[in-house]
Image (cartoon, rainbow, N blue to C red):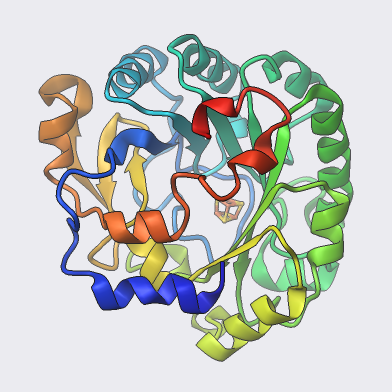
Length: 319
Ligand code: SF4
């Protein structure tokens, strides 16, 4: 997908709820398991600013997942913050989602807390591991804060760990995806070879999105120009690269927080917008958020274009 095609949607948008009831907005949902993270990315747009550190409420989230499954959810992604800070809870919820019949269950993680042993346990229920990989260069990682805040810190080799995890995923039939946020610091990098080495089926490149109240809003020197972003995309030459501009990203994701409530980011800041889904039902809770269905389709939120690439296992339900 090109930047031009992702931008076409802006011309046909008529508001935050385009095209009435199609497709089912709950087909692809993200649960932000926590806002806490062990990394210190200055461009982070979903950090600890909005919430307090607490363990995921597994019974609550299980009930929320049950409701999502009944509402037709076909892809459930666990992210954060860093979901692997709560490995036991994450494993329980991944397994529960799969038991509820959700065809694609995925995790987005910086990978630092994941191990091949944990992946082996998760493999029967985990379809995709999305690795946040924003640079392979140590000094660029330092500039962006993309490294552990404690412990190994700057000595942590994100690319080496990603290679180890990707090899484990390959051995266990878990598909690999890569997420990269493009900033002014990494926009000159050539990352396609590393992404290919990792065997990624899908590579999302996000234009850095500064949201009010989030860390990224303060990291003004890291905001890339649109030309920087387009230049990064055009130089990679990767067949699995999917660019995502701010406009596409802002309100085309259905996001649920650690409290089982919908999050709205359409107003340039992330707010917990709804009551708990378990209390009022999914339809009433969803009334509180802005969702751009056109942008959702344009960014291939349905995975129609890349479903075949995820054919390692269990993905036929999306064809
Ligand atoms: S890895 Fe970086 S961008 Fe991702 S949640 Fe942690 S601090 Fe934010």
